[in-house]
Amino acid sequence: MKLWLEELASPIGTLRIVSDGDVLRSLDFEEYDARLRDLLRLHYGAYELREGKVPRAIKDTLRAYFAGDLRGIDALPVATGGTEFQREVWAALRKIPAAQTMSYGALAAKIGRPKAVRAVGLANGANPISIVVPCHRVIGSDGSLTGYGGGLERKKWLLSHEGVAMALAA
Image 1: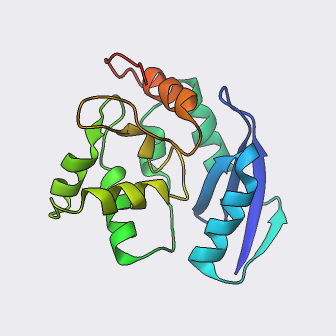
Image 2 (image 1 turned 180 degrees about the horizontal axis):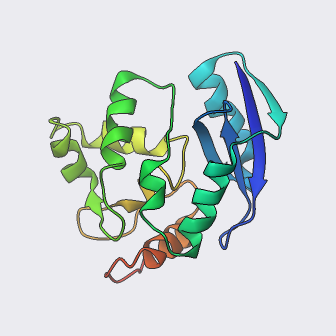
């Protein structure tokens, strides 16, 4: 599989955007390049990653998100590998609107698997498309912030940027 990589500056760090030329395949922060590459390998097996050619629409939509157009990322086309269960969780994540959060338990119930809270948490943590597949919108059942692959400070920033009305103490 041939994939394209470009970087994009954001208020919370440089993003590494991976596309197949049509859709978004991965989005992670610059300092997590090893994780990005590991997830690509796990999802697609052999792949070739080259600089450039990420569609302008993806970059423009991400810029607009950081400028305040929170809903634009909802329409970005994405594609992932992963298991059927993971893809089910990631699809459910995309249905959590900006400025809203959901607990892992509520997300598990939403996909019809109320006892799969830990599995939902693991799938959430294996999400290869940060921000656009908004795993940052998932919080603990007590309203606390829980882990985020980009770090809790970024999770706080993203939720605050989206207007989540909650105490953002970790």
